[in-house]
Image 1 (cartoon, rainbow, N blue to C red):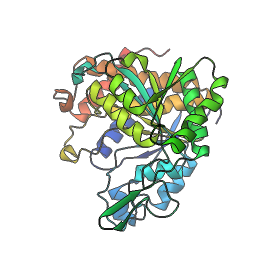
Image 2: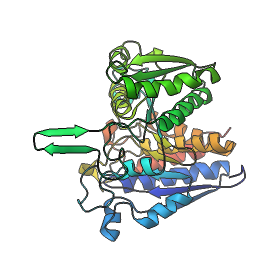
Image 3: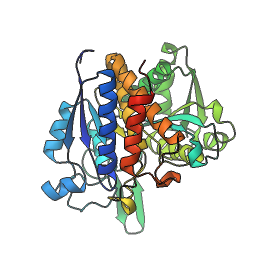
Length: 364
């Protein structure tokens, strides 16, 4: 894609509050794109229960075909484990997409928001987790599920670590550190207990460290990191780790920052990337116009920055900044949804973000 072409983004609304926050995100994205004259093409695809009700699959073939043609995706929250057992995806649609489309790096920046009463008010840390293998049983076998019960009293789980996945993830992590101006990359591991798999993972970073001399590589046991980070969080601005460790550590960081309610993320591959909020479907408030779309909007800003890094289109960078500043400005002004102690609806919050974006923030 050249600098002058528009962006092609597929939108999957998901379950629970997903449709509400996805609609809000699309509205804000259109406003940001219009302000910087960025052409975007959005295509809606079904995923989750609505897809299953229509085609008996939470990821029908027409959705997958569209995703193959679109480099950027926005995914609303989807359920985990609540789908009918005859669903051919057999698990979480998000996990299927990450594995089968090789979205191997899950980037989760965690920043403290004062409205969330954070335990660490100045927390600012990014966790990058490998996304396609590890202990997750829905993505570590070509056929079937990676947990077994040979008898009713014995359960086994497989952990898969491959050199190819480690190599591409290590390079992505170093390149991300350089692109964001970080001078230290911490690797959270447990090589003492898992010497072969963790050794393969760590080795991928060590083999290319000389190619990234501006980035200091630090190896740290995951348990040591978990206990040290709350007391010395500024030492760890950027952390890379395996799948399960990354899932746990990023949630630990989010808890210290006040919760996952405004936590964004992106799932990035070599050719495609997916914006996805860290939080879940919140079925208790679905359809009530109470959901906070901030996390998905901020995740979409990350997607725009991924487009910028891939294609050097400055308008993507400008639109991403507009999204981020408009969300922060709206929240700082006190227009917040009930999860942040306010009375704003999803619709009124979205309207306030669009207004801030259009009237109060100058593009640069």
